[in-house]
Image 1 (cartoon, rainbow over the protein chains, first blue to last red):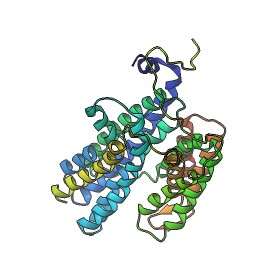
Image 2 (tube, helix red, strand yellow):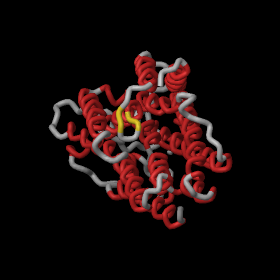
Image 3 (cartoon, each protein chain N blue to C red):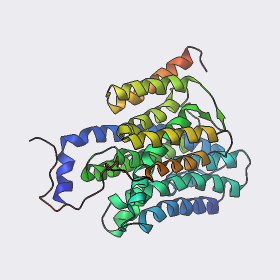
Image 4 (tube, each protein chain N blue to C red):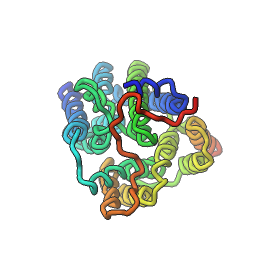
Length: 249
Length: 102
């Protein structure tokens, strides 16, 4: 625990905090347009806010609301939304092994397991920083997402994210997140195959499914390798006081 | 929209997260599974980059997002801070639209 406490004061964490808040703010702007869209698709302000609090998966919420708003059936709206949500299950496979603590803490961590928190965590080198990045990003995005939803639902009139180029802000953020994963040859191959798979399938499959198929690119990891190719180092047990981090003091 | 819909969606979305988070917690997985799990972010986040840059619903298109994301790649390569990367991408994309590229 002392190792964990130490990292909060660490200078190495500052870029993570900055990145999390920036990302949170960008998410908040999209949350405003989600709130607006949800209310105009027929949901009440309360339903819209409860959705963001409990579902907490932007892509799923947006697709559910847009299908319902376009007159689609609740079943098809649910189907599409849950296919998108399955992506978080894939993230949770790896995050569940990194985040420890009591059951209530882990339940909260499971809820916070989304694109942004996972990617930011994976971008860190040591296990303590990975945990810190996960929590900071997850909580930041949670706060901004719900605040933005409330504002949007109450506002009822949209600011247009497209005018401000915010639709490019997300992929740009993902570029920064994926970059550390490209250090290994296998990471690069998986990234290339994943994005190629996704683009080929976008015109063919329903929205949300291509991303799931892209996850198949992890099969690049099947053949054994002499040098350990893991881009994200595995968590190792560390006792208090034994933690050595790279911060000069 | 019914409350039932909201709660079923919430339960389903959390179930997706919880299955991954708790099912395999504390278990030692085969090395091959470990190697594949470590590649999840590379594969999926790269796919998100591609989708958010080129996809508009079920169509692919080249629009001002490409310029913004392209600039962000250069910025990340030149080790620009995260904020700069995101703001540059949004600014370049918005600017390209102002200039009439849609």
